[in-house]
Amino acid sequence: MSGFGPAGTYPPWGRGNLVPSPGRRTGAVNWPRGSLLARFAPDARAQLLRLGTTVRFEAGDRILTQGDRSRHVLILISGVVKVTTDTADGRTGLLAIRVAGDAAGELASLDGNPRSAHVTAAGTVVARRITAGDFAEFLRTHPDAALAVSAKLRWATRRRMDYMSCPVVVRIARLLVDLVHAHGCPVEAGTAVGISLSQAELAELAGASEAAAQRAVRTLKGNGMLVTGYRHFVVRDLDALGAFAGTTPDGTGTGA
Image 1 (cartoon, rainbow, N blue to C red):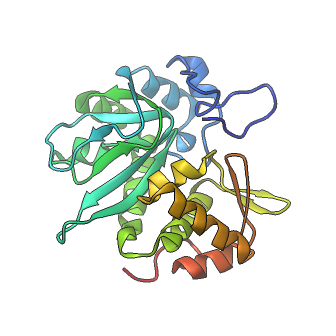
Image 2: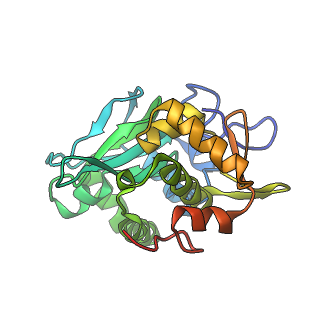
């Protein structure tokens, strides 16, 4: 995936299949604002990314499975994943998305319980696979990083809502609000979604067909809330988009 960054620099989610080596250089790059690694001190980032092994997944691959008792953690180096759960009525609910610099599977690693959700690649994903023991030892020796992990887990719990009960256009709006609050950056036209996404990837994250996602994006653009470009989304009116999505100004849900 291509991403945002100064000319001549390549963030870890950019340049196609580029995989940074997990050493000092990787710890020094600019990770997306709001991601877990962006909250770590440089030395802590570098140390964490030296742990484990590099793994790669393709679009649609099931990375983690709800109910499974595996306990490893994945630190995303590039790509985007969706976190979903099987609901009681047989549907699939979208809980969250994770981007480069985020973790997946950390809850089961820390509490030892079965996986609480599925994690699926929404495109090519490269990650570091770290054992539960190594991850726990890292957090024990880096209390500031442990606090950041705890804060992200609390935020994810607050953000859980059943996207699949909503029309596609509302799901797309909620996704964009989530992304802006986690990774957005101000631009002249409004607030840019701080990661690069195609409409096909947006559709995959929302659990919708590409045609339905395209119709939803056209609706949001027609209402003056959104501007799009190549792999680029700018929210023109975040308050209006949040109201349409049914979220409060801080991005948390008003219901569900």
